[in-house]
Image 1 (cartoon, rainbow, N blue to C red):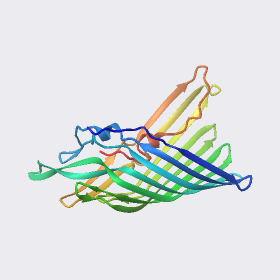
Image 2 (image 1 turned 120 degrees about the vertical axis):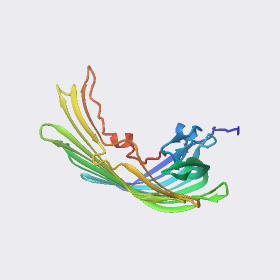
Image 3 (image 1 turned 90 degrees about the vertical axis):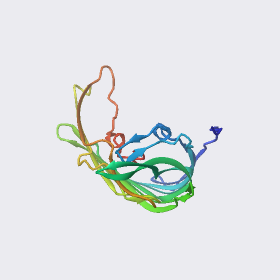
Image 4 (image 1 turned 45 degrees about the vertical axis):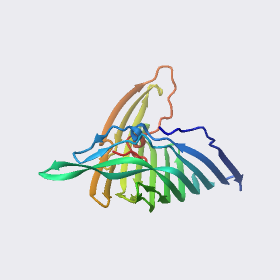
Length: 292
């Protein structure tokens, strides 16, 4: 087993300059470590079908990144604009590859190769892009915030004699809207879209999702009723086509189907927290950086 030393420094530096009372510029740097999830290092294979399996890599290393960003903030009454340009270099970046296991299985009377998907460390990933956030607070009853991130991702590295270099432009956007309906019913809507992307082996289609939440307080805020609808249109799916020199495959993965949850909460001698709808993150509406 290779000896590993995880003792290191991870500095963060943030500088700011106020142009005026409502405008400011920031300059930031940080160094981070990204550790593999337990599933990534589990060597026992799990099958998603007769011809496809996922197997972790116990020899995978953490990845390290250095990130720089320059930001601009402007508060204009009820509207707040926050934008930044950034650059990040990641070493030992996690990448998922598909490879022929050398074994076959019979499907529909035909002999079909069994494909294994596994995480590896590649040399580097450079990402640079532009992020824009806007917040609009009309009143206590209505506020909206949105985010869009456009970036170029450049990956370079070889594994087992195969080159996995890739250069790809992608983007994602989020909108969160909260409005208080008559009767003091809070209505929250969250929209997510992740643009299509591709690397040396895989092409992923864009993914859209929508979550809704309604809540109302009773008994001076001591009790609450909440209705949550996750993935309203049942579209939070990762659809991917993989191509190598020896095979082609198509896969669809859904973390969790559309769900509806009704809950009643009563608080004894406790103040109500400012809970926010988190269904999108909990059910794979974020980056969906899992593999199966």
